[in-house]
Length: 117
Image (cartoon, rainbow, N blue to C red; front, side, top):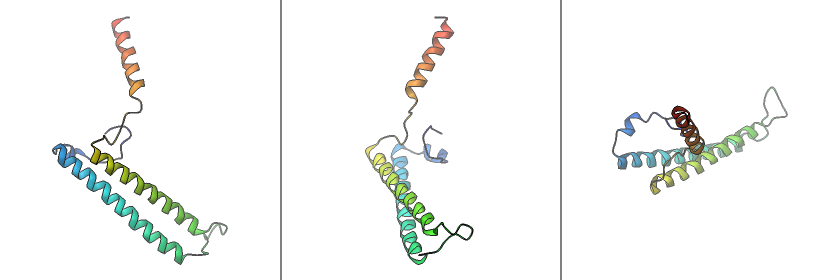
């Protein structure tokens, strides 16, 4: 598993040729975007039918607030899926190591200590 990546079981996919891996990555991201759109569509219907409904234990909380938060989350998931699909098409890696510089410096220090420099 790589840092910054989604949790996934990719052992079988990693054994496939690079072109097939890219096709599967693209398909997964497009299916995730479609799922997000379907969830948003159902939440629009759901919020329309729940106007004025409040939480049972806390009547000051409107239940639609929760559903709007879900809607926002699915919208973010849709955008991320499209960006990741575009990255797959462009051949860009899905993850990047944001700590690469720090790791390189630590490795260099470790080598210097080992050599007694």
